[in-house]
Length: 237
Ligand code: SF4
Ligand code: SF4
Ligand code: FES
Image (tube, rainbow, N blue to C red):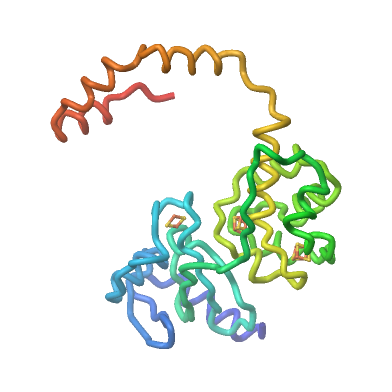
């Protein structure tokens, strides 16, 4: 980026009021205080796909954008990223990465299982493009390498905050759908490696024995207003 363009960009970032952004090629003036998602709605777009929790958890709002005076293509979650003046952006409501089906009950937690369903993992070039693009700041390359080495517990742990936005997969030169690999690793970990807490069996037995039935019935009988009141006044950690 040239110095002149950097200064121009920073000056514009300091302004309040409206900024000019480009959504799928069309220019809009939007308040500078909005996230990309809210700015798109302000501009008149209605999300039928590409929006879910609106809070950074569901990964539905993958966005690709460029900034004025900058040649790079950036990626982000639209609900978590503020607009900037001169932003040129578009939404990716869905990343159609390949996702094999399997029965988790018939697998072993090993590198062979990972490679059976995702042989492309062996092609990882260790370029780290996936980690750089991740809006959750996950070390994506590391969990792919852990998967390849059969370190399923580490792959599960490293990928724990993945929201399945798919942005890593669109940048991968080895065409690895990293987030689906991570999902398999976490499933293998949960099924075969994780030590279940002692209270889990007790809690399941309590549920089967109907300990919470009366509580459920009471909640189901409440009006919407009473239910909201109960929710707002719940015990919080
Ligand atoms: S690991 Fe990939 S799919 Fe998961 S949050 Fe990061 S970029 Fe998105
Ligand atoms: S982008 Fe693909 S090839 Fe590069 S480190 Fe990540 S998984 Fe490996
Ligand atoms: S809408 Fe769920 S992460 Fe953005």
